[in-house]
Length: 334
Image (cartoon, rainbow, N blue to C red; front, side):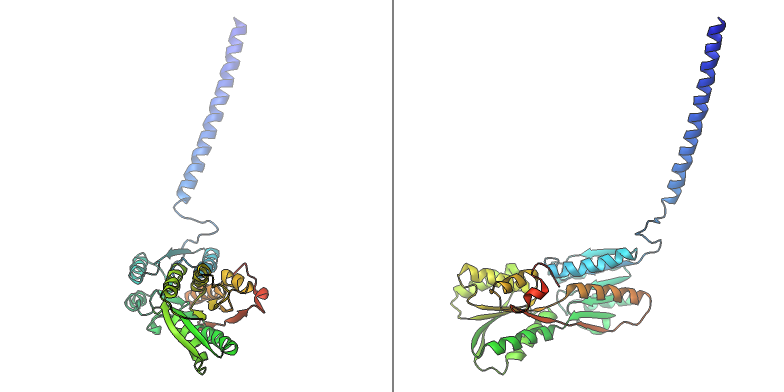
């Protein structure tokens, strides 16, 4: 009996010890949960400031690697600063771009980075942004009413067209030219104007047709196929950008004319550089989207800090031909 009682007492002591240990651990756990619950109302993570900036971005279209590169550079800086970036894709629809920007303004963005689908279409929307105190940084192509932008960062678009035009004029005394255009984009119009100004003194060079393609491969290709089917005679093509250039080459290839028609563009995209290397394209004026993105991000944060920022920033361009394409690398943007 005594043995049973002693055994019972030992078990009782063991039970009490386990009980109080469990109770202690439960209370500790509850305190820890309560601590994290109270702290959860604020985010003190490495990538999130308590009072962060909210930045909106709207490029002409995200169906273009050029804008993806710009966006990646800006996003990297925004994340490093612990701020938030909202990206919207208007897909070449000016009305949609206006609606998306108005939505972002209603959500309380502090700054807007924008490439207008149509350079004259954003006047009223950007005026509303200015009235709300939202900073506006325009990239790649200008907007009508430059006073509405706190900073405009573009490649030298006129200079790019002129650079290609001067190279073309040195190579040709006679030519029947097609021009692939994007009339609603100021950048596209400036490039075409630069090219045409460069060849203006050459009487043997004649523009036989201008084709609106919105700078898109999937529009440029069928438009050129239609032109070929219509019997239009041409021997060279200038394209406002290299998405159009690649579409043009695809159409020429379908008609066994690739490499026999001179193709000139602007951007020096990886695809275009590969075509230049193969001798299928003649030349392209290189844009530097990484540099544009870095300049745009720097402008945003200088403006947040109320530091001086140039109103207009031009990023230089360079001509790429078969002679120097290896220097730029055909597998990446410069």
